[in-house]
Figure 1 (cartoon, helix red, strand yellow):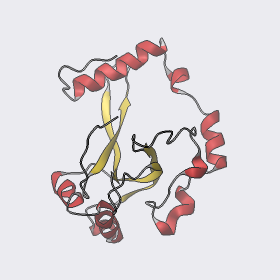
Figure 2: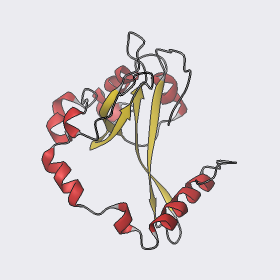
Figure 3: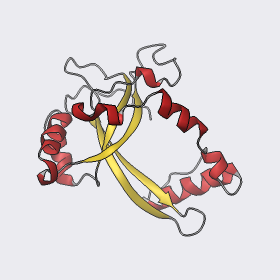
Length: 180
């Protein structure tokens, strides 16, 4: 997604709430997978441009957690809470992560290099468990041999995509939004 003319805010973050849709062709059901957070700006006011592998956190962020994430550095809060183990408000979804790419559109030519797992910034992964999280050549090769969404669709791929998009739009009551 592209945001234009966003003013610097040291606490601005993107919260990603990861879901799975089960049984899309019959009776669709949304299942929570986890969530993660990415600060938009660094301490000097620049966009955190780059490709990041971020750990997934269990459950979904409630309003109290979101408020605490916005009080300062969100990963300070996350690391403090995950260090508390089961007593913390936030726990890692063990060895699960997402990859995002964040860029400052003002930087012309930025990120013209295609997807490359060797360039992921892994600084947000739990330090003691990096070997269990890190995306490497073996995992990349396995993923490329796996089933694609196109092969999973039991119907026309375009219709399948529309069905998913329309379900999501309806489920989240996104008024006026349409599948393009």
